[in-house]
Image (cartoon, rainbow, N blue to C red):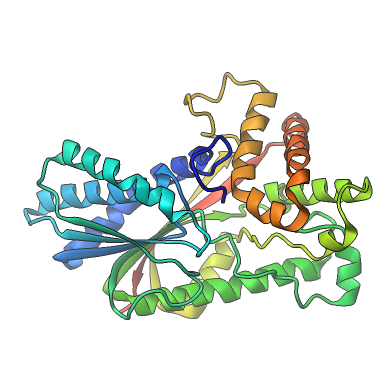
Amino acid sequence: MNGGKGERSYANNSLLQKKLMLKAKPILEETIMKLYHDSSPSCMKVADLGCSVGPNSLLVISNIINIVDTTCTILNCEPPTFQFYLNDLFGNDFNTIFKSLPDFHTRLVEDKGHKFGSCFINATPGSFYGRLFPSNSIDLFHSSNSLHWLSQDPLLGLTKEAESLYKGHCHIVSTSPPEVYKAYLKQFQQDFKLFLKSRSEELVPGGAMLLVVLGNHETPRRTGWELISLILNDMFLEGLIEEEKLNSFNIPVYEPTVEEIRHVIQEEGSFFVQRLEILILPWVEGINEAGDDSFLDGNIKAGLMAKHVRAAMEPLLSTKFGEEVINEVFIRYQKKVVQLMEVEKLECATFMISMTKNA
């Protein structure tokens, strides 16, 4: 993700992710209420996996503190001490998060006085596709808009025949051979199974997890990753991108179906699904800072969408293809979205999943 607080930073271009987190808040409330009915931890340890950077990182913490405060009032018990762990990859801009902590704490005190429990916030860098914490140490895991990222390039073992059919692309497109779909799915299954196994070992008995996952609600459908692949292919054909660079690059993202998610959860066996909801939203839903998107014309909506995707994808693309092509990629992205909005219904699915660790 683009770090810092600049115009193209993820911190300033993640309103859609914020909206999804707010949509999932009722399920978070339900998850925490159940957790407190089953046990009342004196120190509540929470890990946010794939926290990224910006205000959303601290919104999770604020929401959880508020929910626990309300729950403790209802149950007539003392609020716990809070220990939050913010997790993302080693290259994440944790410094920007930490610089905002003094103001965040001041707002907490202003909002609640001193009646909420002590709050400690730490960073835990590393891949969540593996162990991050000691056994039986975490009460609640939260992860939003992160699990569509895979641990590695899923097409490393693709056959020569499939490679020739897929050549010139860097993600699943409508003409991709079946082997490409299968390779992406296999990588997701391996990663998600390891994720679940690791979290089950780290959660306390009766611990809970809330996942907000980008998913696929219908096939075939248009994805933003497909647009980037088509744009890069066009730029290669025009001689703006080297063939070798394009053919050695694949976007490590997979948006699973509900059935694929349920299959891995059942196969891994450590969790019981308490609740699973599907949210369908337009691509451009919630990306206007002023609030109402309906009055914006198509070009402005597409421009905002391009900024959001750029904030997430620019570091990955610029590392591979060079910074000099990035502007052109997202100018074309905006134009393609404008064209598609006139003829297609551009929507994305999000799955909100509340789970508890099996006894």
